[in-house]
Length: 141
Image (cartoon, rainbow, N blue to C red):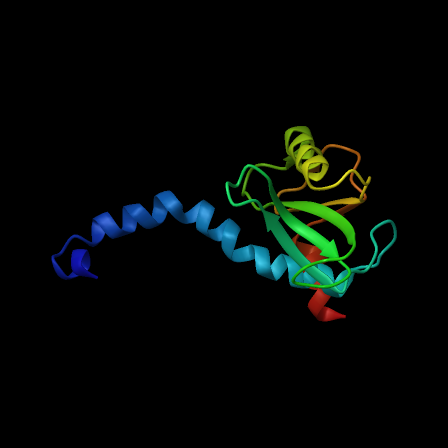
Protein backbone atom coordinates (compact mmCIF):
# COMPACT_ATOMS: atom_id res chain seq x y z
CA UNK A 1 0.00 0.00 0.00
CA UNK A 2 2.85 2.35 0.77
CA UNK A 3 4.08 2.16 -2.84
CA UNK A 4 0.61 2.88 -4.17
CA UNK A 5 0.13 5.82 -1.80
CA UNK A 6 3.48 7.23 -3.01
CA UNK A 7 2.28 6.95 -6.60
CA UNK A 8 4.49 3.93 -7.37
CA UNK A 9 1.77 1.41 -8.09
CA UNK A 10 3.88 0.42 -11.09
CA UNK A 11 6.35 -1.30 -8.72
CA UNK A 12 3.55 -3.23 -7.04
CA UNK A 13 2.05 -4.24 -10.38
CA UNK A 14 5.41 -5.47 -11.68
CA UNK A 15 5.96 -7.59 -8.56
CA UNK A 16 2.50 -9.10 -9.02
CA UNK A 17 3.21 -9.85 -12.70
CA UNK A 18 6.54 -11.50 -11.91
CA UNK A 19 5.10 -13.73 -9.19
CA UNK A 20 1.70 -14.41 -10.74
CA UNK A 21 2.42 -17.87 -12.17
CA UNK A 22 3.90 -19.18 -8.91
CA UNK A 23 1.10 -17.67 -6.83
CA UNK A 24 -1.60 -19.03 -9.14
CA UNK A 25 -0.06 -22.50 -8.99
CA UNK A 26 -0.09 -22.54 -5.20
CA UNK A 27 -3.58 -21.02 -5.04
CA UNK A 28 -5.10 -23.73 -7.25
CA UNK A 29 -3.61 -26.69 -5.33
CA UNK A 30 -6.30 -26.89 -2.59
CA UNK A 31 -9.05 -26.71 -5.23
CA UNK A 32 -7.43 -29.48 -7.25
CA UNK A 33 -7.09 -31.70 -4.18
CA UNK A 34 -10.73 -31.19 -3.25
CA UNK A 35 -11.84 -31.94 -6.82
CA UNK A 36 -9.84 -35.19 -6.84
CA UNK A 37 -11.31 -36.20 -3.49
CA UNK A 38 -14.76 -35.77 -5.05
CA UNK A 39 -13.97 -37.48 -8.38
CA UNK A 40 -12.03 -40.58 -7.43
CA UNK A 41 -12.34 -43.60 -7.76
CA UNK A 42 -12.64 -43.60 -11.51
CA UNK A 43 -10.64 -46.65 -12.54
CA UNK A 44 -6.98 -47.21 -11.81
CA UNK A 45 -6.86 -44.54 -9.10
CA UNK A 46 -8.56 -45.45 -5.82
CA UNK A 47 -10.80 -43.15 -3.83
CA UNK A 48 -9.00 -41.54 -0.92
CA UNK A 49 -10.57 -40.27 2.30
CA UNK A 50 -7.78 -37.67 2.50
CA UNK A 51 -6.08 -35.85 -0.37
CA UNK A 52 -3.24 -33.54 0.52
CA UNK A 53 0.36 -32.81 -0.38
CA UNK A 54 3.79 -33.71 0.93
CA UNK A 55 6.96 -31.67 1.30
CA UNK A 56 10.10 -32.24 3.27
CA UNK A 57 11.28 -29.35 5.42
CA UNK A 58 14.03 -28.65 2.89
CA UNK A 59 11.63 -28.94 -0.09
CA UNK A 60 13.96 -31.40 -1.80
CA UNK A 61 10.95 -33.74 -2.06
CA UNK A 62 7.71 -32.05 -3.08
CA UNK A 63 4.61 -33.99 -4.04
CA UNK A 64 1.59 -31.85 -4.90
CA UNK A 65 -1.00 -34.61 -4.48
CA UNK A 66 -1.01 -37.49 -2.02
CA UNK A 67 -4.05 -39.68 -1.53
CA UNK A 68 -4.17 -41.41 1.85
CA UNK A 69 -6.40 -43.45 4.11
CA UNK A 70 -6.63 -40.59 6.62
CA UNK A 71 -5.17 -37.20 7.47
CA UNK A 72 -3.18 -35.43 8.67
CA UNK A 73 -0.89 -38.43 9.25
CA UNK A 74 -1.55 -41.35 6.95
CA UNK A 75 -1.29 -45.01 7.82
CA UNK A 76 -1.48 -46.02 4.18
CA UNK A 77 -0.76 -44.07 0.99
CA UNK A 78 -3.06 -44.68 -1.98
CA UNK A 79 -1.62 -42.55 -4.81
CA UNK A 80 0.71 -39.65 -5.57
CA UNK A 81 0.47 -36.92 -8.14
CA UNK A 82 1.63 -33.65 -9.58
CA UNK A 83 -0.03 -30.40 -10.61
CA UNK A 84 1.25 -28.48 -13.63
CA UNK A 85 -0.96 -25.40 -13.93
CA UNK A 86 0.83 -23.50 -16.68
CA UNK A 87 -0.75 -21.73 -19.64
CA UNK A 88 1.50 -23.12 -22.37
CA UNK A 89 3.23 -26.17 -20.90
CA UNK A 90 1.72 -29.61 -20.78
CA UNK A 91 2.61 -32.22 -18.17
CA UNK A 92 5.53 -33.92 -19.92
CA UNK A 93 8.12 -36.67 -19.46
CA UNK A 94 10.29 -34.37 -17.32
CA UNK A 95 7.38 -33.79 -14.95
CA UNK A 96 6.72 -37.54 -14.91
CA UNK A 97 10.37 -38.30 -14.11
CA UNK A 98 10.29 -35.81 -11.22
CA UNK A 99 7.07 -37.34 -9.88
CA UNK A 100 8.53 -40.86 -9.99
CA UNK A 101 11.72 -39.68 -8.29
CA UNK A 102 9.76 -38.02 -5.49
CA UNK A 103 7.48 -41.04 -5.12
CA UNK A 104 10.58 -43.23 -4.67
CA UNK A 105 11.82 -40.86 -1.95
CA UNK A 106 8.48 -41.17 -0.15
CA UNK A 107 7.82 -44.91 -0.47
CA UNK A 108 9.04 -48.10 -2.10
CA UNK A 109 5.47 -49.01 -3.06
CA UNK A 110 4.49 -48.65 -6.73
CA UNK A 111 1.62 -46.27 -5.93
CA UNK A 112 -0.62 -45.13 -8.79
CA UNK A 113 0.37 -41.77 -10.29
CA UNK A 114 -1.96 -38.94 -11.23
CA UNK A 115 -1.36 -35.60 -12.86
CA UNK A 116 -3.41 -32.47 -13.20
CA UNK A 117 -2.56 -30.07 -15.99
CA UNK A 118 -4.12 -26.91 -17.31
CA UNK A 119 -2.54 -27.46 -20.74
CA UNK A 120 -2.77 -31.18 -21.40
CA UNK A 121 -0.40 -34.13 -21.26
CA UNK A 122 2.65 -35.01 -23.34
CA UNK A 123 3.69 -38.31 -21.77
CA UNK A 124 2.44 -41.77 -21.02
CA UNK A 125 2.43 -43.88 -17.89
CA UNK A 126 -0.03 -41.99 -15.69
CA UNK A 127 -2.81 -43.89 -13.97
CA UNK A 128 -4.98 -40.78 -13.95
CA UNK A 129 -4.84 -37.52 -15.94
CA UNK A 130 -7.13 -34.60 -15.21
CA UNK A 131 -7.60 -31.26 -16.91
CA UNK A 132 -9.83 -28.29 -16.12
CA UNK A 133 -12.96 -29.93 -17.56
CA UNK A 134 -12.56 -33.04 -15.41
CA UNK A 135 -11.96 -30.94 -12.30
CA UNK A 136 -15.09 -28.88 -12.90
CA UNK A 137 -17.07 -32.11 -13.23
CA UNK A 138 -16.38 -32.69 -9.53
CA UNK A 139 -18.81 -29.92 -8.61
CA UNK A 140 -21.35 -30.55 -11.37
CA UNK A 141 -22.16 -34.15 -10.51
